[in-house]
Image (cartoon, rainbow, N blue to C red; front, top):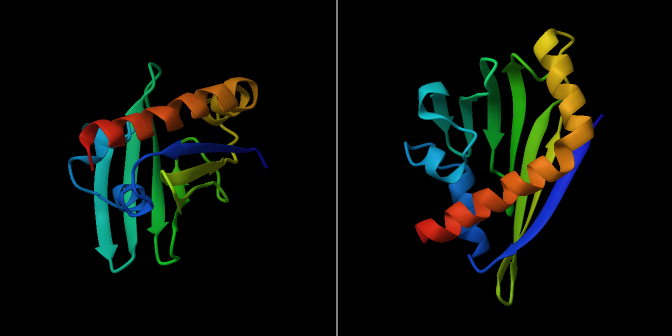
Length: 151
């Protein structure tokens, strides 16, 4: 199962980073560029879990995933894919944030299984070939967005 992990440091407190991952307001697309408002729907939030669909236009249509978010474990958030037009069961996204003397260290991991359809095959191939630099750039953009928002 393909996994990409990126570790970054930020001057932001770990709590700020973690809170942004389960902020399901309209502000979400300002932090996470791959979440377009037109393809974002919160189905429900209950305590420390949420059921959310997020998607983005890709130039060849919209790619979307519906995830069960869970932030009940201190210092981490997990989004397990429950449905998608790209990802197969077993796919997830995980973020941990731990305090450091200068802010926090963030680790983001994308665990991806791909559907056996044209979109899944295309994105699965791209994930294996250019996934690491693409997701590293994406993680840096998320952190830069958080820092610029001053959250």
